[in-house]
Length: 365
Ligand code: PHB
Picture 1 (spheres, rainbow, N blue to C red):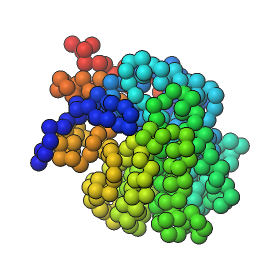
Picture 2: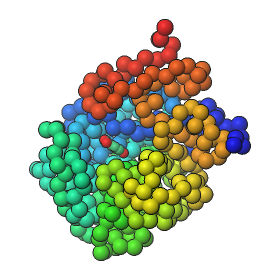
Picture 3: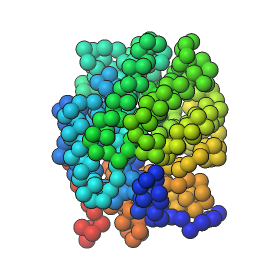
């Protein structure tokens, strides 16, 4: 039942920014970065086309060469990458938009073929994920990762701090910590992937430790109100499981509250397949635990997004596929014009086709 007049087109204050609408462009891997994992002019055009979003969250971007897991994904650790991203942020700002960079380390979701000197991927524990890595040489079986030594963990935290600092140099408005979808921080948090017996494993407090240390490190660079975090409590993707997601994620959200983060971003994937990534629970519980702004993401359309906002279940809604196929999504929502259909064949990799050539509504007959 609608309890307020708020819609996706209502403005909202996010930290110190006033956003003209509540439509977030969700982070989406598109595998079109250039040599050296640096953004190119094509990436500049793609993001600039979508500057009417209330907020853009970039595709996940590696904080170090050891955090790479896929072909042609951008990074935020080299000078070349920073300067590529600077072109992106300038183009988005020129069009009046705001853009956060998503900080990423894939952990075990990689392959020696993607890593410097063919090293093993790192993870909380030496547990091989089911499935295949998408490498430059095609799909290859995942390997058993190397469990990070306790002494190596501070350097990982430093990589996040460094990435956050580089994002500032690249002109971003803030950063989003990728704590979701089975990548490194999520691997530490959920007990299916974390079998450690030291200060970073075992108890829930220990499993949450790395994520919280990363949040603290990133908040030493950026004010908390320019930092968001993404979690995916029910996401089975990347062979993820937790024996008690309700306890794990309500705890995590409560621990995050004191940081005063700009937002909590919940990827709801998995809620349609209850029980796969762990016992199901009602994600609305996280709304109750969260003190501050909440973004939801998961197959919303205009009607369901407006209902979620009006009912107070979220403050903003992130759109993935709809935004990749409709560069002017806010305008289309406001005019209730027909939407372009996303083409899965061009989601990952390739050229401008299926990337920057989706038509704007005012160029359609
Ligand atoms: C992917 O490339 O499949 C991918 C990357 C980042 C995500 C989820 C999926 O958060």
